[in-house]
Length: 322
Image (tube, rainbow, N blue to C red; front, top):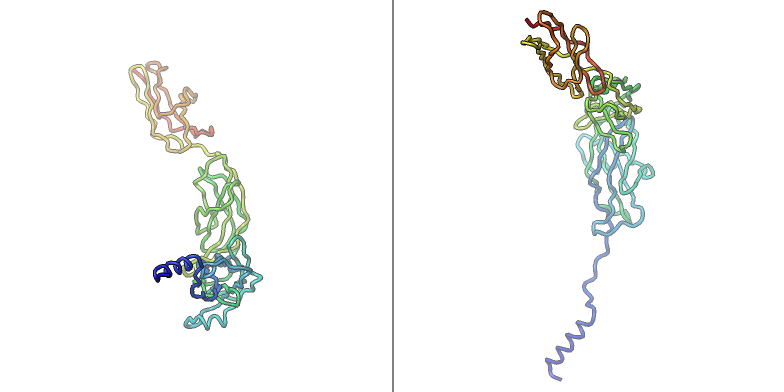
């Protein structure tokens, strides 16, 4: 057989057989870092959250239940991760809850009041292998803040007025609609009261409040107050119209006044000598054509809102046609 033909047949044989490459090293099965660790002082607890790693550094899924090492402790005079690791308290793995990829733990804060603590987590794979500590979160801890008590809601002018009892430097206010799942912070207050001016009459709202205190670049927060549910009603009339002027004409008396600015304003009513002679006026003007020469008339106007609340009567204006 010719050499060229022999080489051709050898190439075909090689192409038909799987080539065995260099053996791969065994996978280390080290979970990737938990990168989003965060902690907050809430009441008498430190509330820690992070996302559980689901894959190894090789991109392989993590099998079984990994060992979660969550530690908390002061950093010492000069932070050294190995020294901190030896002295920091480990949170028992049984106290760490994992659900839908999210991990959380509640740690008693009382032993750390007045201290700054560092919090870190690392996740061990089979054989105890890991890639190191997560980003550390730092907390300056204070005595547990008082929980706001006695939260009440009442009608205000175009608002809901909230009042409660607690001694704290600052408060957060949260609100949601009954059908909503998530609460939204709508404001803060330096005193135990707040007026929510972003409401609509007839709609139902739910509220709760927290005491908070600035600590470093974070806030310590109290336990949440009990929630209150309230449906505001419009019991407040518009402002009394001002600037009423009566100008006599040839056969009429012309009335003008300043426009009301309430968002729920609906109309004006006009009174002559104490009796209403016109209503449902959309503009701050009126022409009285039912007048007699030589007679002096006394006029007043009122404002009415969309709920039917009527203001008091304006100051009077008098006029007579010749």
